[in-house]
Image (spheres, rainbow, N blue to C red):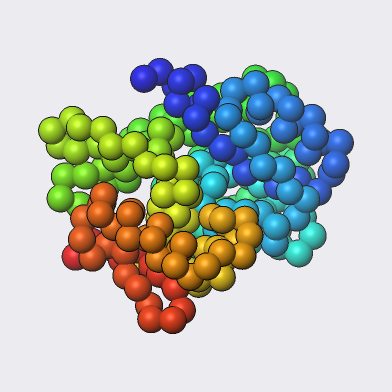
Length: 229
């Protein structure tokens, strides 16, 4: 699959506090990707990231609440695969030195232009490809393709997940080895209050499709995706 085809299935998380810049940048990104989630500060960016929807993250270096560097640092504590870009001006060079350990793909210098954004997206696909980020290994020869929402076996069999199974697995992968509460799962997957039975049934159906013991039930609290031993 070519880079453009991958991009058509991806979601970009864009954090920028300037409304005019945010809207114009989002419109340019939407030419290439399936969806753009645009937020105005760092706290909202982290909330959206942990909902499991972002394939690529673009952060303004200076934002209310948390700066782009602080958001990137928090993401990197649990995720070293998702492509992250910092948007800055030339006079932010001193701050950018702090970003060296954060495995950023690149810095985008303001004012942003169409060519910059296009190259950033292409770099993201290449980066994901090299780091195995276009699919996620679940063990026992099964890989998850987040872009298509399907499970791929070593025999080449493709098993499509339902929309809610995909949302659940995306959320658990983003928060792997961390508890995701039942209340958060209900809010993000069902977008409403649901019965405990509905959530249990959804988890049960997903467990039947992926290797045993990857989804751990933390009694009365929620679920987590355990890393492979």
